[in-house]
Amino acid sequence: MYIPMFYGFNWSYLLLVIVSLVLGFATQGYIRSTYSTWSKVPLPGRKSGAEVAREMLAYDGVQVAGILATPGELTDHYDPRDNTLHLSNENMNGGSVASAAVACHETGHAVQTARGYVPGKIRSALVPVVNFCSSLWMIVFIIGAFMAISGLMTLAIILFAFSVLFQLVTLPVEFDASHRAIAYLRQAGYDDTTLRGAKKVLTAAALTYVAAALTSIMQLVYLLGQTNRRN
Picture 1 (cartoon, rainbow, N blue to C red):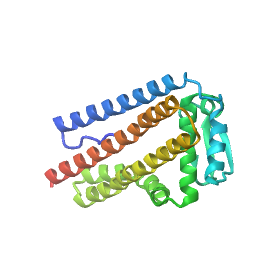
Picture 2: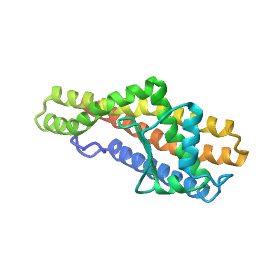
Picture 3: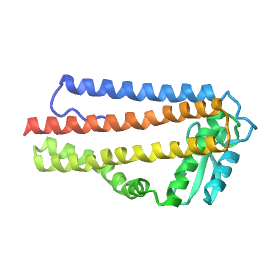
Picture 4: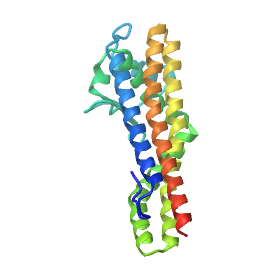
């Protein structure tokens, strides 16, 4: 979400928008390109993503409520609320290196929940807070800017900071899930090509989270700088 320009045109705001757009398009393009490449490389044994996920769950001694197909591309996720893996149709039924990598990554999140992984618990606890703050901070900021009430603007920045914190906490959670995925594929005896492809896919996916965190940090810094200058 871009910061509204209440202070008149300035080059720092324009640079923020450009950098945010470039980061977003570049990382999204990279993950789609990498995923597309490795989705064409068959997984040894031709197992589907769902099958590999079940095997990883069994290896880690973890049970989930189910593995469900979800529409769309790269819409895969694990929902800790119902302890369910949601895999896109391609990754649910596909037998590619990319499908296995994504399925194992989401399974890694299920393992985190079962093991009580602390950053994951913090991230889950922040979800309702971030949902509340993300819908409120902009309204508070607009009112504070137009009425020249610095206290409201400061409150808005604090509310926005929770979104930044959420992005930062997300990084170790995603990195750890990818690490668990690669570790499982390695111990399961998959070949070097599979491991290399899985690492590429998951690294590309991780970059999207890094880009989101950087964008949020830049937005927070911009808000702080412009608010301090106004004060």
